[in-house]
Amino acid sequence: MKLICLGSSSHGNCYILKASNEVLIIECGLPMIEVKKALKFDISNIAGCIVSHQHRDHSKYLPEFLKCGIRVLALEDVFNSFPTLKNRVFCKNIEPMHGYKVGGFKVYALPVVHDVPCLGFVIEHSEMGKLLFITDTMMLEYRIAGLSHIMLEANYSDELLEDAISNGRTLSSTRERLLESHMEIKTTEQILLSSDLKAVNEVVLLHLSGRHADAEQFRTRIAKAVGKPVYVANSGIEINVSKLPY
Ligand SMILES: [Zn+2]
Ligand SMILES: [Zn+2]
Image (cartoon, rainbow, N blue to C red; front, side, top):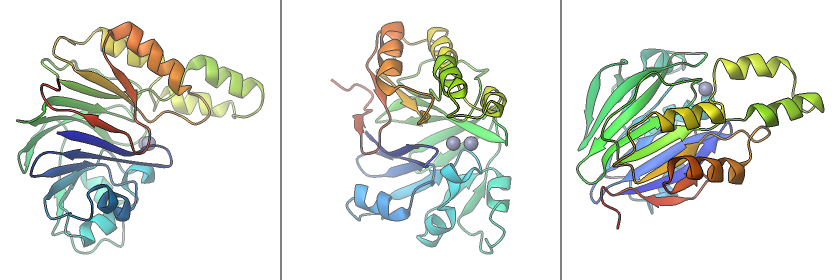
């Protein structure tokens, strides 16, 4: 099983989980052509696409994905946020605290805390084990046992945010919005340190802010804290997320 990160920021989020004979897409915030290129134009075995919430950096290309015949699973308000969406044949409404089958992938939706309704996901597959995907949330109430892989938001650090505010690059009103909607690096660290990491192969940091994050600093900080390989989900990065990678 391979994880391909096509984008992980406010400019567009999209990830591909590629098993030996099927594919799950997480988020449709980048054009379908990017997905096609990453899959060498073979999109016949895409089992579906799961979408966390309606913000356009996660959902902008939903109509295009549907036109390609991809089944999209999302909260009803994500579909409703596209008023021109007439044909809902490939739309599947999902709800927090419910589980869904998408091909051989089992997806469980968790509620998270953002400024619009938003889901995190626990995704299971026989080739991968259990993967936690959490983005666009100020915190996470749940701790999931037996995880093999963790993809977790690390949006900003208080220090870099305060620097940007004090030298006028960021409006001070941004502070309040971020506090209630995105994950600060200490929260990311605390969640990991209070989780059962025994079977975790690696941690992938998501949705880093362009102005209020430092990728290398965040990566080394989290790697030191958890003692596992840590990656930043830069565009184009591919990570082996097989159950037993070595
Ligand atoms: Zn976002
Ligand atoms: Zn968002």
